[in-house]
Length: 248
Image: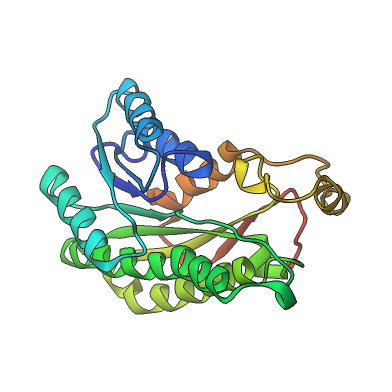
Protein backbone atom coordinates (compact mmCIF):
# COMPACT_ATOMS: atom_id res chain seq x y z
CA UNK A 1 0.00 0.00 0.00
CA UNK A 2 2.39 2.65 -1.30
CA UNK A 3 -0.08 5.49 -0.82
CA UNK A 4 -1.85 4.47 2.38
CA UNK A 5 -3.34 7.47 4.16
CA UNK A 6 -2.58 9.87 1.31
CA UNK A 7 -4.98 11.87 -0.81
CA UNK A 8 -5.02 11.87 -4.60
CA UNK A 9 -6.90 14.34 -6.78
CA UNK A 10 -7.60 13.02 -10.29
CA UNK A 11 -9.14 15.32 -12.88
CA UNK A 12 -11.36 13.86 -15.58
CA UNK A 13 -11.75 10.72 -13.50
CA UNK A 14 -15.16 9.55 -14.67
CA UNK A 15 -13.93 7.43 -17.59
CA UNK A 16 -10.99 6.03 -19.51
CA UNK A 17 -7.52 6.70 -18.20
CA UNK A 18 -8.79 8.89 -15.35
CA UNK A 19 -11.05 6.15 -14.08
CA UNK A 20 -8.26 3.56 -14.22
CA UNK A 21 -5.88 5.91 -12.41
CA UNK A 22 -8.40 6.62 -9.66
CA UNK A 23 -8.97 2.91 -9.06
CA UNK A 24 -5.25 2.08 -9.16
CA UNK A 25 -4.38 4.78 -6.64
CA UNK A 26 -7.21 3.57 -4.42
CA UNK A 27 -5.76 0.06 -4.60
CA UNK A 28 -2.51 1.57 -3.31
CA UNK A 29 -4.35 2.97 -0.28
CA UNK A 30 -5.00 6.55 -1.36
CA UNK A 31 -8.21 8.40 -0.69
CA UNK A 32 -9.35 9.72 -4.07
CA UNK A 33 -11.05 12.90 -5.19
CA UNK A 34 -12.96 12.01 -8.35
CA UNK A 35 -13.29 15.12 -10.47
CA UNK A 36 -15.65 15.23 -13.43
CA UNK A 37 -17.29 17.84 -15.60
CA UNK A 38 -20.35 16.30 -17.27
CA UNK A 39 -20.66 12.58 -16.41
CA UNK A 40 -22.08 12.62 -12.88
CA UNK A 41 -23.40 9.07 -12.88
CA UNK A 42 -20.12 7.66 -14.21
CA UNK A 43 -18.17 9.61 -11.58
CA UNK A 44 -20.36 8.21 -8.81
CA UNK A 45 -19.70 4.71 -10.15
CA UNK A 46 -15.96 5.33 -9.94
CA UNK A 47 -16.33 6.63 -6.39
CA UNK A 48 -18.27 3.51 -5.43
CA UNK A 49 -15.46 1.32 -6.75
CA UNK A 50 -12.89 3.44 -4.93
CA UNK A 51 -14.76 2.91 -1.67
CA UNK A 52 -14.95 -0.81 -2.32
CA UNK A 53 -11.13 -0.75 -2.18
CA UNK A 54 -11.44 0.30 1.47
CA UNK A 55 -10.58 4.00 1.11
CA UNK A 56 -12.54 7.23 0.97
CA UNK A 57 -13.83 8.95 -2.16
CA UNK A 58 -15.08 12.46 -2.81
CA UNK A 59 -16.88 13.34 -6.03
CA UNK A 60 -16.51 16.96 -7.16
CA UNK A 61 -17.97 18.47 -10.31
CA UNK A 62 -15.75 21.17 -11.74
CA UNK A 63 -14.80 22.47 -15.16
CA UNK A 64 -11.07 22.57 -14.54
CA UNK A 65 -10.57 25.00 -17.42
CA UNK A 66 -12.22 27.65 -15.20
CA UNK A 67 -10.16 29.23 -12.44
CA UNK A 68 -13.08 29.72 -10.03
CA UNK A 69 -14.17 26.10 -10.42
CA UNK A 70 -10.61 24.92 -9.78
CA UNK A 71 -10.38 26.92 -6.56
CA UNK A 72 -13.67 25.36 -5.43
CA UNK A 73 -12.37 21.89 -6.31
CA UNK A 74 -9.20 22.32 -4.28
CA UNK A 75 -11.09 23.88 -1.38
CA UNK A 76 -13.50 20.94 -1.29
CA UNK A 77 -10.55 18.55 -1.34
CA UNK A 78 -8.81 20.30 1.55
CA UNK A 79 -12.04 20.50 3.55
CA UNK A 80 -12.51 16.75 3.21
CA UNK A 81 -8.94 15.47 3.51
CA UNK A 82 -6.79 18.35 4.84
CA UNK A 83 -4.14 17.94 2.16
CA UNK A 84 -3.26 16.94 -1.39
CA UNK A 85 -0.46 14.42 -1.76
CA UNK A 86 -0.94 13.39 -5.39
CA UNK A 87 -2.33 15.39 -8.29
CA UNK A 88 -3.05 13.72 -11.62
CA UNK A 89 -3.91 16.16 -14.41
CA UNK A 90 -5.84 13.95 -16.79
CA UNK A 91 -8.78 16.02 -18.08
CA UNK A 92 -8.67 16.37 -21.84
CA UNK A 93 -10.59 16.38 -25.12
CA UNK A 94 -9.94 16.12 -28.85
CA UNK A 95 -11.40 18.05 -31.77
CA UNK A 96 -9.48 16.67 -34.71
CA UNK A 97 -9.20 18.33 -38.09
CA UNK A 98 -6.50 19.12 -40.62
CA UNK A 99 -4.94 22.45 -39.69
CA UNK A 100 -6.08 24.16 -42.92
CA UNK A 101 -9.68 23.36 -41.99
CA UNK A 102 -9.48 23.71 -38.21
CA UNK A 103 -11.84 26.24 -36.69
CA UNK A 104 -10.33 28.76 -34.30
CA UNK A 105 -12.84 27.74 -31.66
CA UNK A 106 -11.68 24.11 -31.89
CA UNK A 107 -8.10 25.26 -31.38
CA UNK A 108 -8.99 27.44 -28.40
CA UNK A 109 -11.24 24.86 -26.73
CA UNK A 110 -8.68 22.05 -26.87
CA UNK A 111 -5.80 24.24 -25.68
CA UNK A 112 -7.92 25.59 -22.82
CA UNK A 113 -9.37 22.25 -21.75
CA UNK A 114 -6.14 20.27 -21.97
CA UNK A 115 -3.36 22.73 -21.16
CA UNK A 116 -4.83 25.66 -19.26
CA UNK A 117 -6.63 23.25 -16.94
CA UNK A 118 -3.35 21.57 -16.02
CA UNK A 119 -1.84 24.97 -15.22
CA UNK A 120 -4.82 26.05 -13.12
CA UNK A 121 -5.06 22.86 -11.08
CA UNK A 122 -1.30 22.62 -10.60
CA UNK A 123 -1.12 26.21 -9.39
CA UNK A 124 -3.94 25.67 -6.91
CA UNK A 125 -2.68 22.29 -5.64
CA UNK A 126 0.87 23.52 -5.17
CA UNK A 127 -0.16 25.77 -2.30
CA UNK A 128 -0.96 22.91 0.10
CA UNK A 129 1.88 20.80 -1.29
CA UNK A 130 4.38 23.58 -0.57
CA UNK A 131 3.04 23.87 2.99
CA UNK A 132 3.41 20.11 3.37
CA UNK A 133 6.84 20.24 1.73
CA UNK A 134 5.84 17.12 -0.19
CA UNK A 135 3.80 16.14 -3.21
CA UNK A 136 3.58 14.26 -6.48
CA UNK A 137 2.21 15.73 -9.70
CA UNK A 138 1.64 13.51 -12.73
CA UNK A 139 0.45 15.03 -15.99
CA UNK A 140 -1.20 12.76 -18.54
CA UNK A 141 0.15 13.82 -21.91
CA UNK A 142 0.31 11.93 -25.19
CA UNK A 143 2.73 10.64 -27.77
CA UNK A 144 0.96 13.15 -30.04
CA UNK A 145 2.70 15.83 -27.99
CA UNK A 146 6.04 14.07 -28.42
CA UNK A 147 5.97 13.25 -32.15
CA UNK A 148 3.00 15.20 -33.52
CA UNK A 149 0.08 13.69 -35.38
CA UNK A 150 -1.62 14.76 -38.59
CA UNK A 151 -5.08 16.14 -37.97
CA UNK A 152 -4.31 16.87 -34.32
CA UNK A 153 -2.47 20.19 -34.35
CA UNK A 154 -4.52 21.50 -31.44
CA UNK A 155 -4.31 18.30 -29.39
CA UNK A 156 -0.60 17.79 -30.12
CA UNK A 157 0.17 21.39 -29.19
CA UNK A 158 -1.74 21.08 -25.93
CA UNK A 159 0.04 17.87 -25.01
CA UNK A 160 3.46 19.23 -25.98
CA UNK A 161 2.65 22.23 -23.81
CA UNK A 162 1.96 19.90 -20.90
CA UNK A 163 5.47 18.50 -21.28
CA UNK A 164 6.92 22.01 -21.03
CA UNK A 165 4.68 22.73 -18.04
CA UNK A 166 5.84 19.50 -16.41
CA UNK A 167 9.52 20.34 -16.72
CA UNK A 168 9.16 23.95 -15.63
CA UNK A 169 7.10 22.94 -12.60
CA UNK A 170 9.63 20.25 -11.70
CA UNK A 171 12.45 22.78 -11.65
CA UNK A 172 10.49 25.24 -9.53
CA UNK A 173 9.42 22.88 -6.74
CA UNK A 174 12.03 20.11 -6.54
CA UNK A 175 13.68 21.70 -3.50
CA UNK A 176 10.40 21.30 -1.59
CA UNK A 177 10.26 17.52 -2.08
CA UNK A 178 7.63 17.87 -4.81
CA UNK A 179 8.08 15.99 -8.06
CA UNK A 180 6.35 16.63 -11.37
CA UNK A 181 6.43 14.08 -14.17
CA UNK A 182 4.39 13.24 -17.24
CA UNK A 183 3.07 10.01 -18.69
CA UNK A 184 2.78 10.11 -22.49
CA UNK A 185 0.02 7.72 -23.48
CA UNK A 186 0.21 5.96 -26.83
CA UNK A 187 -2.68 4.29 -28.62
CA UNK A 188 -4.79 3.49 -25.58
CA UNK A 189 -8.12 1.72 -25.92
CA UNK A 190 -10.44 4.53 -24.79
CA UNK A 191 -13.31 6.41 -26.41
CA UNK A 192 -11.04 9.37 -27.20
CA UNK A 193 -10.11 7.45 -30.37
CA UNK A 194 -13.71 7.11 -31.55
CA UNK A 195 -13.43 10.06 -33.91
CA UNK A 196 -10.28 8.70 -35.57
CA UNK A 197 -10.73 6.62 -38.71
CA UNK A 198 -9.97 2.92 -38.64
CA UNK A 199 -7.47 3.44 -41.46
CA UNK A 200 -5.55 6.03 -39.44
CA UNK A 201 -5.49 3.79 -36.37
CA UNK A 202 -4.37 0.81 -38.43
CA UNK A 203 -1.53 2.83 -39.95
CA UNK A 204 -0.45 3.96 -36.50
CA UNK A 205 -0.64 0.45 -35.09
CA UNK A 206 1.81 -0.75 -37.73
CA UNK A 207 4.38 1.47 -36.01
CA UNK A 208 3.79 -0.05 -32.54
CA UNK A 209 6.36 -2.79 -31.85
CA UNK A 210 4.18 -4.33 -29.15
CA UNK A 211 1.53 -4.97 -31.79
CA UNK A 212 -1.49 -3.99 -29.70
CA UNK A 213 -3.33 -1.06 -28.23
CA UNK A 214 -2.56 -0.20 -24.66
CA UNK A 215 -5.15 -0.23 -21.90
CA UNK A 216 -6.03 2.49 -19.39
CA UNK A 217 -4.63 0.16 -16.75
CA UNK A 218 -1.23 0.23 -18.48
CA UNK A 219 -1.14 3.99 -18.01
CA UNK A 220 -2.45 3.76 -14.44
CA UNK A 221 0.43 1.48 -13.44
CA UNK A 222 2.93 4.11 -14.58
CA UNK A 223 1.07 6.82 -12.68
CA UNK A 224 1.00 4.73 -9.50
CA UNK A 225 4.76 4.27 -9.70
CA UNK A 226 5.43 7.99 -10.18
CA UNK A 227 3.05 8.82 -7.34
CA UNK A 228 4.87 6.61 -4.84
CA UNK A 229 7.95 7.04 -2.68
CA UNK A 230 9.95 4.84 -5.04
CA UNK A 231 9.94 7.67 -7.56
CA UNK A 232 11.16 10.32 -5.13
CA UNK A 233 14.32 10.99 -7.16
CA UNK A 234 12.52 11.16 -10.52
CA UNK A 235 11.25 14.54 -11.67
CA UNK A 236 10.79 16.45 -14.90
CA UNK A 237 10.60 13.23 -16.89
CA UNK A 238 8.25 11.98 -19.60
CA UNK A 239 7.47 8.27 -19.43
CA UNK A 240 6.11 6.94 -22.72
CA UNK A 241 3.51 4.22 -22.25
CA UNK A 242 3.13 3.40 -25.92
CA UNK A 243 4.22 -0.13 -26.71
CA UNK A 244 7.48 1.17 -28.13
CA UNK A 245 5.96 3.60 -30.64
CA UNK A 246 8.29 6.42 -29.64
CA UNK A 247 11.85 5.41 -28.82
CA UNK A 248 13.83 8.56 -28.12
